Image 1 (cartoon, rainbow, N blue to C red):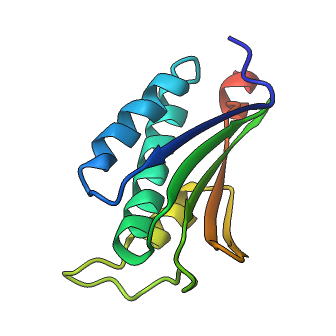
Image 2: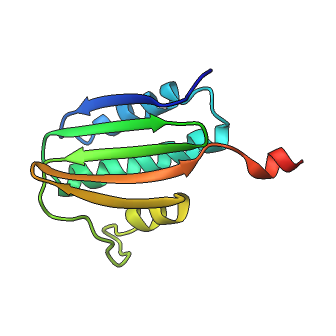
Length: 131
């Protein structure tokens, strides 16, 4: 499976039930990658998407940009407020902390029509390659 420089995009509605659709879509798109990469990607996409649905506003788009050694995940929403980590509590606050711990890099871009939260994951397995 050639995953070089391929862009996959999915538009979603504001319903929290869309999260199951997004998780399934990620598993389908990334089916040729190692299972640990896929499971981490599903978790990161789920966190970024749920953050957008809870704190942003429509329109919402999820993108996977696959490359030779990394996967870039992007989630757009039309909200103008920047995403920020909150102190963990019973109501949440763990999502961006989890993304930070799982991703090689992450951040956000403000756009005139909203913002994009992004995260990058390594898709190669250097430990396995060394044997």
